[in-house]
Amino acid sequence: MDNDFEKIMQMMELFNLFKTEEPTQNKSENLNHESKDFFDSQIHSPSIMTIKAAIPFLDYHQQRNIGIMIKVIEIQKLIEIYSSQMVTQNKRNGEWRREMLQSIRPHIDENKRYMLDVLIKYMDIKAIMQAGGLVR
Image (cartoon, rainbow, N blue to C red; front, side, top):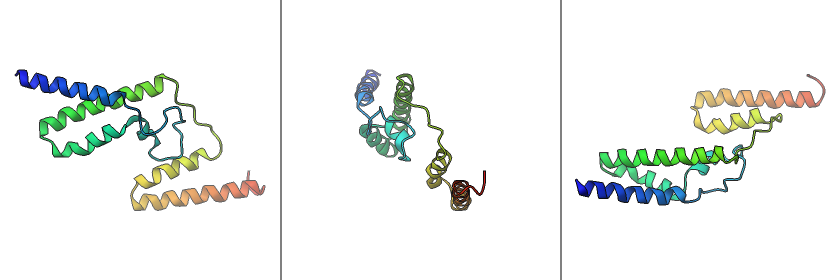
C-alpha cells in the first residue's frame, strides 16, 4: 500500500514539473492565429505530448491515471490562458468566416470537404463581385 502511495506521489511531482513547462509557442499570441494547431500548442508542452504518445503502451491503470492527470493539467493551462487576458477578441473583418472554414477543412471527411470547398469558392466569387460593385 505504501508503495502505491509513493508511486502516486512521484507521479504528481513529475506532473507538476510538466505543468510549469512552457508551451511550444508564445502564449501572448492571439488564439486566432493562422496555424490550425495553434490552440493545442498553447495547452501542450513537448513533455506532455511525449507522455501522451507513451500512454497506449502502459498498463490499463497507469493509462487511466496518467490520462486523467494530463487532462487536469490541460484544463489548468486553459484556465490560465483565459484568466490572464492573453486571448484577444477575433477581429470581425470580412475574412474571419473564410479562415474558420479553412481551419476546419482538414478535420472533415471527403464529401463534406467538397461542400466546404464549394462554399469557400462561393464566398470568393461574392467578394469579387462586391469589390466590382456588381452585388451589395
